[in-house]
Length: 531
Image (tube, rainbow, N blue to C red; front, side, top):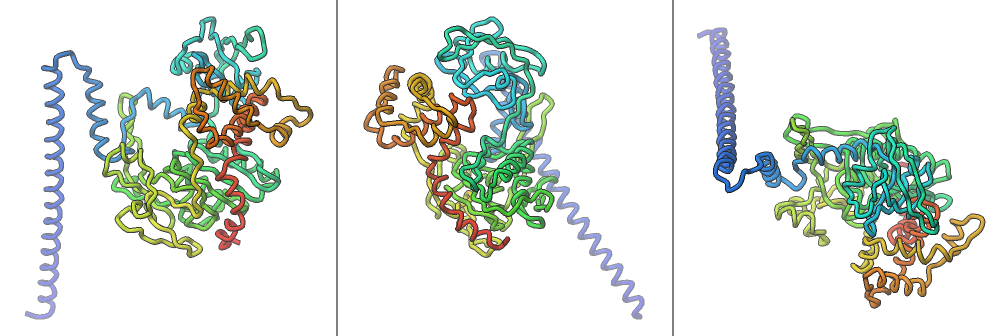
């Protein structure tokens, strides 16, 4: 056999082997597919047979819609704590929060003493423009008494299409007669930026409470205002921010991080699972000193931002360990308007850390436990080390570890009850405001020149007892300063009908914020790689 014939034979053999391999692989995938399809059909038949049995033999006529929803919920609960079924009605509420607006009159409220009590009008809404104030009680809606109304009924009666009207009667402290308002409904923004202001001549403060479609625009606007006011350093508060849109987390991080760096990576099995998101130079702000506050309630999108800031050495992370949600959910719409939010990917910080907390002990344990021992916080058994852009070492764990740990102040259950039942609010309105006198810049007088005394706290306990709750006097010392700050903050909100004044007083006495303000020199050292 000559060389040419030998070469031809080798090529034919090669082709034959290649075809055999392709056929073998194809057969393997086909068998797996058939097996998977067969298993799926078998399990589907099992579910159908159970539904059929219940339909025929159950003691009462069953609601098959509820049964099918229960089956869906049960399947998703076996996956992870964040995969879930959202019924059509609930999905409408979530959609409102996600797009960042609804249509109505524009108040935040609480049902107190069986009446709608205005916490604060939302800035720029019909309620604010007409002069509805903090502390007002809505006693009548469209000629019908509002006494004993439920939260769900409030939404039905006060919300409605833009341009429609609703008539309310309001009881106001110090005004003997009811006040009539005819309110034309409008689009009401659901703000992501809960509050923002200057703490001093150079220190800005922003509290972000969620990531919705409007978050990036809102944050741009408030940062513009703060920088125009002289901001040279920022405390960015993400405590108790449970997250939201991944795209908005990327956009928020992009404001602080110069272009060309990985902000977050997403890895999953589904077609849309794998993506890497990079910072750009399109939206990057000035390189001011930055401290980000987190705690155990900071999750998901909040952790994406905090992880990017930490890994890319853009600022300092302060507070307590974040929640640890490293799963990404994708919404799949059902024909009836419901939605299945299915976990389809993990996300990783720029250095490669996975922050997902273990969930093998069930949802109850997953949401109830706040781990403290670093040895318990491992993702895969050991604390794997990673490096930040500046060469510092950070570790993979269930959540983001702060650079400086400061535990949130814990209040007693008795004080929590005073808050939840709005007793402090009522006390400030009924007992504290009548005695407050000021001239000129009243807020500065309240802020710097007015103090809630120990005698005032004694009166608060007496007031609480009259409201049906006897506050244990022995617990007072533990929460003394907190209660004084809370009373003063409620006074500020009642006087100016503005939540920013409330938060200003609260933030100034917040121990985590106080300590963070002392850490800006260290924060500047952390971000030295950018200067």
